[in-house]
Amino acid sequence: MSNEVKKPIFIVGTGRSGSTVFHRVFSTHPNVAWFSYVLKRFPDKIILNKLIMYSLDIPLINKITKKTGPGEVYQFWDYHCKGFSNPCRDLRADDVTVEIKRKLPIEFSKTLTKKRNRLLIKITGWPRIGFLHEIFEDAKFIHLIRDGRAVAYSLLQQPWWWGWRGPPNWRLGELPPQYKAEWEKYQKSFIVLAGIYWKILLDAMEEAKKSIPKENYLEIKYEDLCEDPVEVFKNAVEFTELKWDQKFEERIRKHRWISGNEKWRNGLTDYQKQILEEVLKDHLKKYGYL
Image (cartoon, rainbow, N blue to C red; front, side):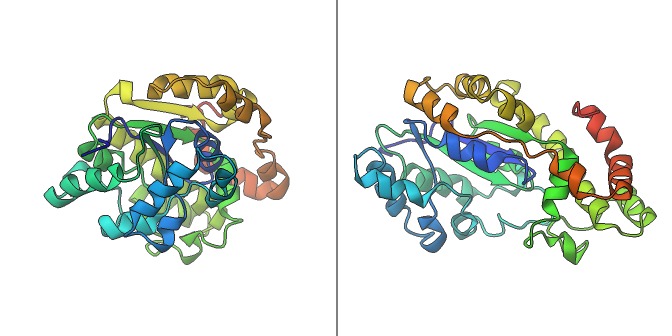
């Protein structure tokens, strides 16, 4: 294998947690390779992605290829790992088959270059970190966490959020009994369901990270990222064992960091805010938001 996959970096989160902007800015580091949207259309042609990685370091051409942007490209994942994008529960280590464990590192290696020799990949929804750790034992996981009230409100603004269909048709399967009781207590409120969505995924992460070495798992609060992005990225770069780069710092400083966390306060009615906080109270306290 010409470019062996070593210490791939996985950015994970519930979705609507700031992982996209974190991923996008992190992708400007000179030593990381990432999956471009070209794999959405051509999931079986990862060599095209490698050409894009090469072109990022060629002046003039890179102005065009940068626009392809990093993405989650689940079409690529599903091509190689059937069902990866929409499992009804979190994917675990015991879901990894012999074929997947053999094949995935080979496919991933095909997008690395001599300069861009560290993979940076974003995945949202179910953690899947136990599944990924089984394949890549030295993987580094960065978990983006955001205030659940902001996440819940943001989910309601998304036409793609499957919560509108209600459980069990929303990708997360049936509601756990205690959460089902909560939802029914509030007449199946959608803002409550969005809050429960956040709780379910954080619960899954708490369980999944038990199998991950502590030195391979990092939590970052989106609010801290927006308040002091350079310091947060320095911590992330050190954690991932990359080198700090001055131009990378300039790109971080150039980005406009806005949390948008006030939107839920202005966008929800007093009653909606009340029931959302009642449902999220324990989790908000646990993660330092109350």
